[in-house]
Image 1 (cartoon, rainbow, N blue to C red):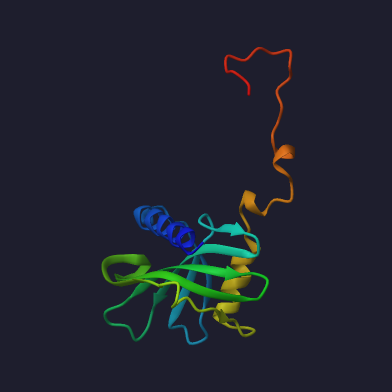
Image 2: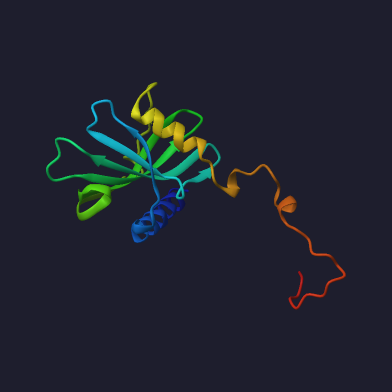
Length: 161
């Protein structure tokens, strides 16, 4: 199971970084001091059960000389109101532009859940992510209900199994 999770994370990381210019960031929240703003990519959200997997962009607006932004891939536990960061990359410019100043992939032993306190940036990120569930894995329909059958009187050039 651990190998599957690491493989899934690797594929998501690879796809995310290769397609970095294709992110569609939606501004979600700014912290109270105004020093950081947070964005979610609502097109990248994947839902499996009670969990959302999604990319987050953070711009550090104040008190940051070298690191201006970072992009993280997070797991959101919608049922328990918590999240964990799986992978992140830090950038020299805002909006994940410029040079990569650092990056890290959390090992399975280092993955830790952080529970959100009410009215915090984390709670708002979780709330926004969990409101945006996009996945066929979240569907209550069975596979048989999702398959549309062709009328029998039409001939198909493809062999039916």
